[in-house]
Image (cartoon, rainbow, N blue to C red):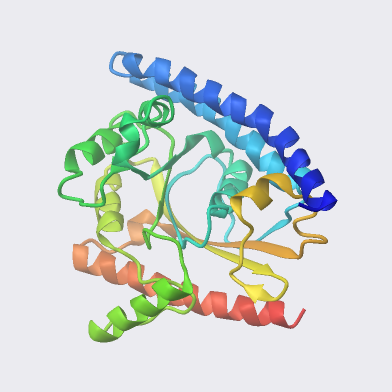
Length: 301
């Protein structure tokens, strides 16, 4: 290992270890709150939101401040404090930095709730903490997940919890191999092929919209499109380790980070399952066109 790599590793460890220890503490606190969530659901939700904010804001500072990632933004303004359904394409583990950057500006960072795999429920500390925070833990078999979704949606619809409920509609990260498989599927099933994207899975989106229409404080769907570039390679994002350990991400390392947001009032979305599925499909085609334009724009710089 070169001297430069050794120094980068040491730098990363110095930055990450305090945050990682605090993450363990955060999971412990949220896990201890779990037994009280049945009796004091609002108090536990608010307390876990505050604890989450302190940890998520810390890692965002590592990415943007310590490691020099410059996240540029475009599109619609995000109203401060507004609850929303958030959908996004999925490129890399670092996607959550892009979404958190907007959540911070909207004052909603601690209120972010992400769809998580149901297997995490049985993981001590991490899984229990996620459960206590009110994150939906699903198997992606939406009929099987009904009870879990009813639990999560009740907190938002009945107790009016302020929330950004976030999902990656493609359900997996974009890779060229997966993109080719998606293109084949789209041709076989007479579906439009979105550029630089996988075809979205619509069932979870439809279920979320149909439930959260009952929550009067959930006003919109935020459609976020995430783009990266690294030394003129489009949609190439840093690894987890790079994002946490390397300085000059948007400088000498040559990364570009951008997130584009479109805000759609929830009341304007169609009603039926078929229409909502078509609506999401149309958004993905438009996202693909936007990504193509962004690729061309960056190529000219």
